[in-house]
Image 1: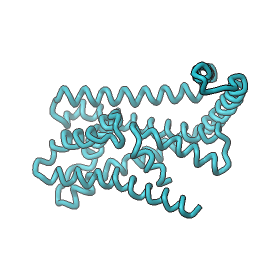
Image 2: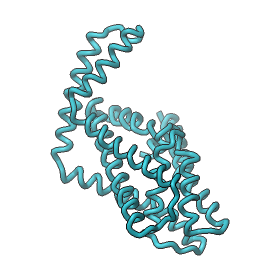
Image 3: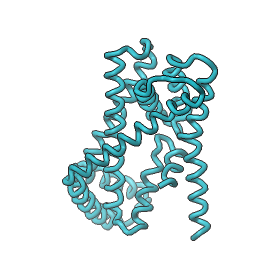
Image 4: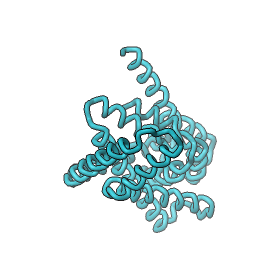
Amino acid sequence: MITTQFFHAITPFAAGGQPWQIYKLKKDGLTLAESTNVVIQDFIAYQIALVFLGLCAITSNYIFHIFPSDSLLKKLVTIGFIINTVVVIVLFIVSFSKKWNKKIIDGGINLLHKLKIVKNKEEKLKKSEKFIHNFHTSALILFKDKFNMIRIIALNFIALIGQYLIPFVLMMGLGIYVNPLIVIITSAYVMLIGSMVPIPGGTGGLEFSFLAFFKNFITDPKLSIIMIVWRLVTYYFGIIVGGLTLNFNKEAK
């Protein structure tokens, strides 16, 4: 949904999109546990595709030496890859470990009770136990259908490839040709760095990494133009269209 892109864009680490998706799915008739599970499994599929593409990019650069050695960029890419891999592992733990989920949720309820924010502690603990059970059950159901999960990962993989080829289209529009495989690898490097920047839209990190990596293939002022248009297409367009859609939906109601 396009409104999800709006909440992804305006929150640090794109963290606002998932709660919005859960809210919308719950309004459409799913239980809280089911909607949370659907969103988490979709996010797992996206992260797996992102990490796999990042791994392919790192391996390709190691073999073919596409980029000149730069200690800072190498460290940033490595950190970005590790962070995204850890996110995948944590999401799997959240999906399948009832014990871990219970400790976290119960600990949160107890803390909020001590802070006088939650009053009916026992009632909340009972509700959380039911939620954890339903969440765990629906996670097992979703992951039993392995073909469907592979299909979702493949769709996310294709979507990311399409996103990574946007700079290629912009370059062709300005009469610049760079091998599309090189563009995909470079874009994967850019996203690994940008995904760890704790600012809405990865602002600053994405622009820096885009210019730092693509300057190896484009040296004239056209690179800045490509970067600006790329950010308009991949970031600001989502904010504008998502914000307008959200506003029109409210007015319609």
